[in-house]
Image 1: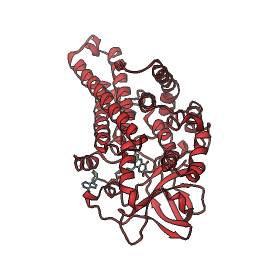
Image 2 (image 1 turned 30 degrees about the vertical axis):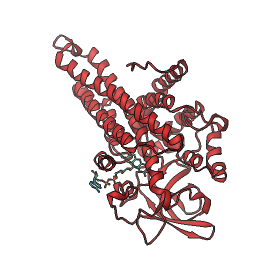
Image 3 (image 1 turned 180 degrees about the vertical axis):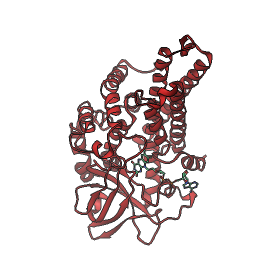
Image 4 (image 1 turned 60 degrees about the horizontal axis):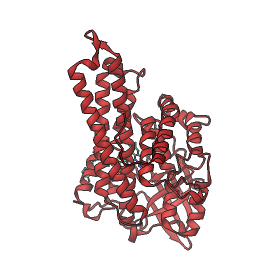
Length: 407
Ligand SMILES: Cc1cc2nc3c(=O)[nH]c(=O)nc-3n(C[C@H](O)[C@H](O)[C@H](O)COP(=O)(O)OP(=O)(O)OC[C@H]3O[C@@H](n4cnc5c(N)ncnc54)[C@H](O)[C@@H]3O)c2cc1C
């Protein structure tokens, strides 16, 4: 399916075509293979996940941002969108893993602190084999939506965080547990970690630090066995008196709300983008099937009620493209130029595109009839993946509440 991009350059078209080939030839088959493995096998040595991320890293697909001088592809926001949407079409789980892998390095770059950049950003962008993997650890066993609510004072979230950092001279000492939902958790070498800074305060008194996950006192939980996005490994992180130098606490309570506003804007825009790829994948697989499956003496594509459903899917995909692209380009440009993003645009994109992907995937399963329930076709995997995306980076109903508070 071609979106009528009238305003992209030949270079952008070429990069998109290369991403499309990689998505079709490597990501889609690997995504299906990994979907069928146990969670433990996905993160075990020799897993196809590591082979694919190595190949993706060799092409720079885990370093789409980041300036070229340090090893990033340095792609502007629109080009990054075009590539990410294609990768999401191939496998939304593996693309999620690649997208999150650079989290700590991007935060380090934004910190502007040369020591932090040297410690976290330079090694990441110089690494071409995908062996450095970042994650964003914010959700806690007792605090999911609370963690996002805490960054919006008007939502009055009163909760005490389960990961606390206390100051000890030139160090911070971190203790507590993040939930099993940390994407890349079982395989991550580094983290962006949200911590409560005042043990007697609330989650509103939070900060953000960067750290290596091989420090003494850090333990990874097992990979979570789950319904959808099975090619995106997730698992807990435990911290027991983990000491980090004070400069690695890149954000303290005073700048927390403003920083997290932009961070969530970038991540929600990213989910909108890969959800668009997933919606397109579900639409295209249904279209192909409807042209082949014969009932009533002709391909079901020729029945009017089938065409009406395909057109509904087509129009949802088209609207996802337009919305997610605009939200991504606008907000990523704002953030990279040091300005405040419009979080409500990114939440609008995330909520709309994931709900649309869920509807498109549901229709895709129905158009496959009984075959939609089988592993012979990817439609049922798309449906499970779409369901997971409605909760990732904030459950949709809660995000809607956050966005509504900004209007
Ligand atoms: C695929 C996937 C990827 C993820 N990746 C990451 C990651 O990389 N890092 C990470 O740290 N976390 C990650 N998460 C966790 C995710 O951010 C949380 O699951 C999400 O924020 C919801 O939190 P919860 O699961 O605790 O649900 P809860 O917060 O317990 O919500 C349950 C229900 O209650 C509702 N609710 C909650 N609070 C309120 C309120 N104040 N008012 C009204 N309704 C409310 C919600 O809308 C929801 O319907 C991921 C989750 C998924 C599914």
